[in-house]
Amino acid sequence: MYSLPEISAMVLGQVKIMAEQFLGGSITEAIISVPAYYNDNQRQAVKEAGQLAGFDVKRIVNEPTAAALAYGFNRGLDQKVLVYDLGGGTFDVSVLQLTGNVFEVLATGGDTFLGGLDFDNRIIDYVLEAFKKEHKVDLSQSPIAMQRIKNASEAAKIDLTLIPNVVIELPYVEERKGKPLDLRVPLSREQLNALTGDLVDRTFLLCDEVLTEKGIARSQIDEVILVGGQSRMPLVQQRIQAHFGKAPRKGVHPDECVALGAALLGDSLGQIDAVTLIDALSMPIGYALPTGRFRKIIEKNHRIPTTKSFRLPPPREQGAPFIEMDIYQGDSELIVDNEYLGTVKVPAANVGKRIDFKLDEECLLYVAVEDAGEPRQVQLATRDTPEQLKRAIAEEMAKRTQRDERNAAEKGGLFSSIKRLLGGN
Image (cartoon, rainbow, N blue to C red; front, side, top):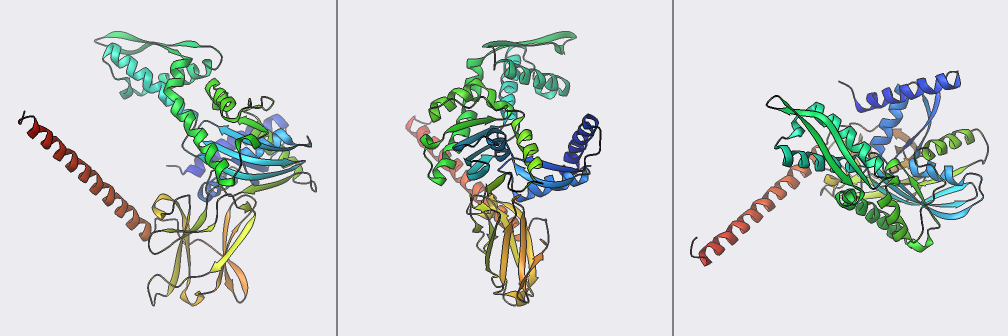
């Protein structure tokens, strides 16, 4: 059994070996890029993975920010750029103001569960359905067949970037009654667009949300930079042209620009005023109220690094020896929809004392409580699911069950009425 940071460390360890072989020496320091929409838990896990792989992680940098750095470094630009980052597993969108070598993130957003894999899955489902219709065989139950279909579907998607039609062919994908069955499914670019159009639509809804939150008009965007392999899809590029009224910038390599930007940042760390990155928080951070609602302390798109201070509230229960404050991150007003980061646990005597939420330039959270007039950093007490969140989840599930039962009862009543009107038939 492995934890996710351990799996990530294996990948980073392999990258370390490759880089050391290529450069002919030991590499001990690293800058690691992450999706802008990663929360604190995910960022902490990436940093932990880097350390497990043997790196001194100098900086965690947001991928769109790194891509903008690759685009604008030493070019003396004065532009607003939108970075459209559609990778294999995540989608990020960031708007940056570039002024010389100052890169300021104005607004950011995204979806950590939208990427090229979702496009692949649409093709896979289409292929499985076509094969089932022709041969009456469900290939989804065969691990070997599924792996071949996954590989072929991704290859077909890539081919459709350059050519209008492909045929997905897999000989002897399964057998029936001792006879081999071959898979042969034609797929056109138009069919792919129809299968995945709603996924592309979701990315532009997120783009508009990010622009609206900051009051930026589409016409104010000077350049659109494409990042991530899935951004090569012709439909994506056509939609960008239609949505923003300008073709995306083609001078930046979508697969390499993030790594290049991170490398430029690494090179500049030892130099004074070489590059200035002013990043922003991708989703709010706050704490849970007794009602199960979320009180935001640091708002979305707030410039980082930053420190926000407030006063410690009294314990949830009168006379309790400790104040326990559950910290969350997310866009919802309800804690049940947000990510639990951990719990601050301090003696009840600290009521009314100052507590600081500090975000560093990597967007990592540190919490400090006033002690003898000075802030003292505190460890988050637990990473287990707190009782309040368990109750909130149970209540939400109960509400949904009641709603579903009510809808079913109403539907049943409607069917009974129709039946009576039709004379019971």
